Image (cartoon, rainbow, N blue to C red; front, side):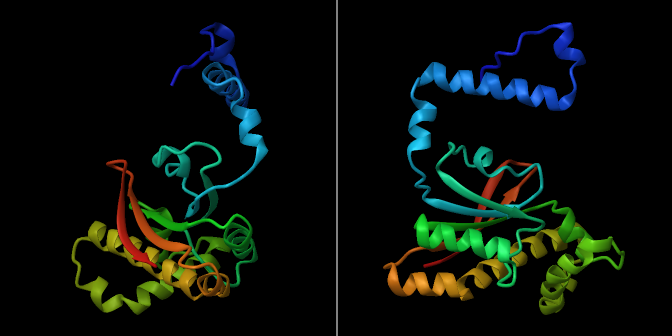
Length: 210
C-alpha cells in the first residue's frame, strides 16, 4: 500500500482522528491513480456476493482478512458474531442481503482469542453485556461435557469459539428469511462457518450448509 502522507512535524503532532481523515484522502487518491473511474463505478450499484457476520473485534476486519474490495461484501458485526432471531438489527441486515441483494453466500466468522468467549465462561459480571454473553453461556452449557474434558484452557476456549460459530450458522439456517430463500431462490444462500486465527492471519473453514 502506498501512503501519500508527507512526513512532517505536523503529521507527528496531529490527533489520531485527524490522521484517519488524512489517510482517507491518501487512500482515495491511490484508488483514483489506478482507476480514475473507481468511485464512479462503485457508486452505480451494489451487488455483493457475500454477507459477512463477524465479531466486532478491531483485529478482524472482514475486507482486509479476505483481501476483498469495497462492494464485494455486505458486512454485519457484533460482539462474538451472535445470530439471534430476536435481533432486529441483524435480521434487517439478513433480510436485505438475502431478499434484495440476493447474496450467494453467508459467512459467520468467529476468531480465536475472542474476549467475549473468554468472558462468557467466567463468573464475573461485565454490566450490560452480561445479557448478550448469556447466549455463549448457553452454548457452553450444551457442550459442557465435551468442553470440560479439555484440560488446556486455551484449547477449551478455541473449541468454544468453533462451537459458537457452528451454533450461529445453525441459527441462520433456522431463520425464516433463509428458510424462505431456500424455498424460492434455488440453492442460495450457502451458509459457511469460519474461524480466524489472529496469530496466523489464516481463516479456517469449519462447516458449510447448502
